[in-house]
Length: 68
Image 1 (tube, helix red, strand yellow):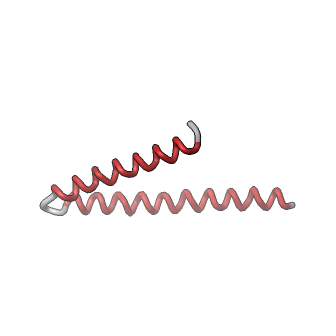
Image 2 (tube, one colour):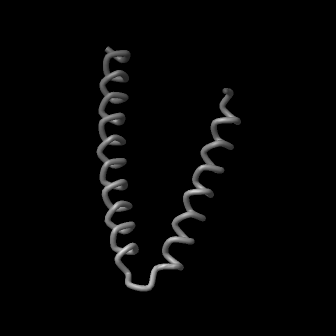
């Protein structure tokens, strides 16, 4: 897959996920699902931040090795 195809696939996957979450949240009357989804998103964001920090550190290390 080329770069454009990956971008389009990511956008479509994000749109599908957003639509699914919207359907779940709109049909929930008690709020339990909303709490679970909110917790899941918070965990996902925290995990993404950790992975991004790891990648950032690796990139900085690689750049410092190249500059030496």
